[in-house]
Image 1 (cartoon, helix red, strand yellow):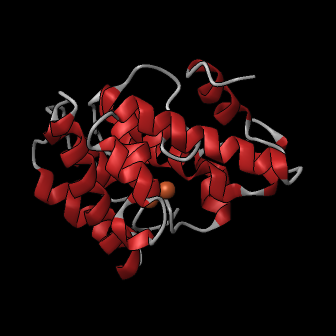
Image 2 (tube, rainbow, N blue to C red):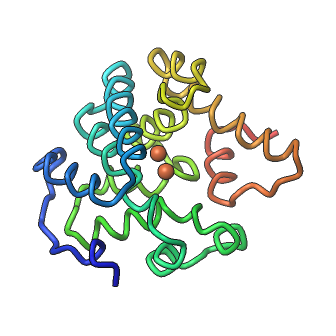
Length: 196
Ligand SMILES: [Fe+2]
Ligand SMILES: [Fe+2]
């Protein structure tokens, strides 16, 4: 087992509790530039949450944790999150949200809302979880990406509209190029009432 993955579990069940130690743990798991992205996502997710009546501390925490598995090797992602569909098998990077959730649960992290946000950040929120919505939108539109400024601006006014724009654009982009859409993303798309 990856020595970092096998770090001793600690029990943290309250939203935002012991956030500094979780932040340090994420810092050990990802590349330095990724960690800078993580901090920007956390700040933006918190700002979006605050503007939309969602718990900002939970959104910040989910932002800190969302990419905890992003820099693991493919074999580790496949072990933590066995593929559910051919896209997962062909592109194990698609598994890093699910794998991150598994990792956090093994470490004793217990906030179900935050865990769902981590799991869903790669493929789109499956249900009405405001924290998951904030993190998904923050991840695709944080300023360091240099794209999606429109989505970021909209999210600070109307998160649901921004999520529809983000998920809708992604699905239409992939379909327009004949690229198969991940089944979980399709479910998120349908849940937003965007399907034609
Ligand atoms: Fe990610
Ligand atoms: Fe990310």
